[in-house]
Length: 264
Length: 264
DNA sequence: CACTCCGTTTTAAATATTGAAACGTCGTTT
DNA sequence: AAACGACGTTTCAATATTTAAAACGGAGTG
Image (cartoon, rainbow over all chains, first blue to last red; front, top):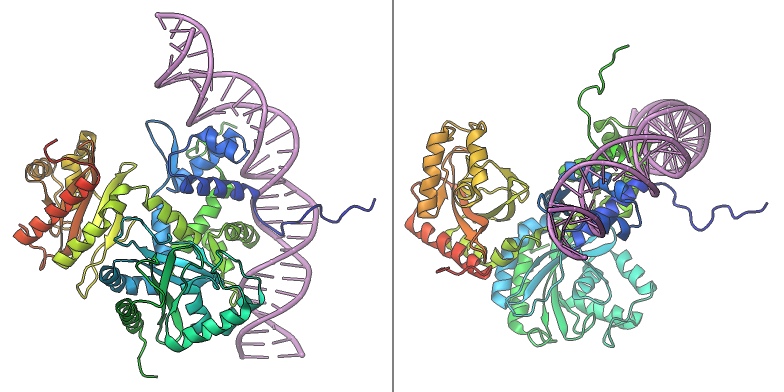
C-alpha cells in the first residue's frame, strides 16, 4: 500500500478552531458593514452554530460586538486598543507624528511612514493629504522593495541582505515603468545612497509618485522611512526643491528625536 | 450525591480554545517586550505545547510574529491593519482629524475624540499636545460617564437612558473633587446641555482638566465628543474664552462635515 | 564538556468542538 | 390577521481535536 506520506501538504502544527475563528474576525474587520451570522457562516463554509459560539467568545473579549437592534455582528473596539498598542512599539511613529503633520501641511501631500517588519516593508502610519482625491496607503499595507520609493531607501540604507535578496529574487513588473532589471536597480540604489532620497514615479501605479527619505536612530541605523505620496502632477521627478528640502528636514528632525547625532 | 447543578456560574456558550488563544494574543499585545513561550504559558496556566500551537496559528494570520534571533514572540502587524479598519468605521474620526489638528495647534493642548460604543465611552483618537509632559489617554481607553468632560457631554446630549443608568448606579470617587452625588450631577448635566460644553477639573486625576463639546451628525444626533486635555494650569475652570471659542468652532466644523445643518 | 534552558515535536487519552435539527422571535407577506 | 420566512440562539450526540506530559535537539553558559 504505498501511499503518499502526507496527502498534499502537511501543516506542521496549528489549531483549526482558532484558525476558523480568526478568519471570522478578519472577515468582520475588513467588511465595512455589520454582518449577519448566517452570512459569516457560509462565507467560511462552517455551520452557524460553530460560528455563533466563536463570535460569543470574541465578543467576550471585546473583539466583536453585536448590534442590539439588528443582531448583526461588527468588529469591536478592542481591536483599536490592540492596534494602538502595537503601533506604539515602533517609536518612529510616536516620535515622528508631529513632524510629519508639519510636512503634510508644508507640502499638501499625503505622508507615509514605513519600516521593515519581519522582512517586509509595511506602512506604519499615514497622514492624509489635502487634495480632493485621496492618495496614500493604509497602515499595515506591505510594499515591494524594488518598486517603491520607501523600498529604495531601505535597500540603500538598510541591512545589505535586503539588497541581495531583492536583487536575486524575481521582481514584479507593476507598470511599464517598474524597474525590474537587477543592474538598473543596483545603480538606482547606489544613487539613492549618495543623495539621501528616493523617488519612484509611475512604478507601482501610473501617475503616482513618492519622495522618500530615511530616518536614523541613536545607533546611526535606519529606523524608518518617510515619504510624501501624490499625483505625479504635484510630485514631479526629479522632485521639487521645496519638497526635497522639507522632507529632508523632517527626516532629520525625527532622527534627532530618536537620539541621532548629525556628526558621526 | 446531591451535587450543585452547575458549579459556580455557567457560561452559556463559547469556545474555551479560542478564549485561551485570545488571552495569549492580548497578553502579548499589552506587554511591551517580546515574550518567551514558557513565559506566556505559565502566565495563562497552560501547557507550553498548547500555547505553542496557538501561537503558530496566530502567526499564520500575521497577528503574532516571532523574532528569528531569540525565538521570542511579539504582536504582529496585522493588528495594525485590523485596528485601522475598525477606526475608519467611525466616521467622526476620519472627518474630524484635520479639524482636530488645527484645534491642537491653536490651543497647544492634547485633543481627544470619544464615542459611546456598546454602552461604554471610549477614546477613538488622540492628538498629542505640545507640552513637555504628555497628557491625554490612548485610543481604546474607557472613561466614566460621571467623572469626565466627555462623559458629561454624552449625558447631556446622548440618549436619556445613559443619564438614568449613570444616576442610578454607584459612581466611583476618583478624587475628592469627583462629583458622586446624583443631584449635583443632574444639575451639572443640565447646565452642560444649556451652554453646550463641559469641563471636569480634578475629577479623574488631580491637576488635570478637560474641556469637551459635542459633535452632531446629519440626523442632529450626537455622533461624538471632542475635548482638549491638559494641566489645570493651562485649562482653567471656568475655561479660557479663546479655548472655548476654538473648541466650539471645531465641533461645529466637524458636525457640518457629517452633514449637520445649524438651523435644522 | 556537561549542564540548563528554551522552542519544538510526538504521543495517546479525553475533552471540547462540531453540525444538524429544533426553538422562539421578529418582520414581512398573503 | 394569520402564516410564512429569516434570523439568532440552544440543544444534543458523535467524533474529530485539543490537550498535557514527556522526549528531542540546539543554543547559551558555567
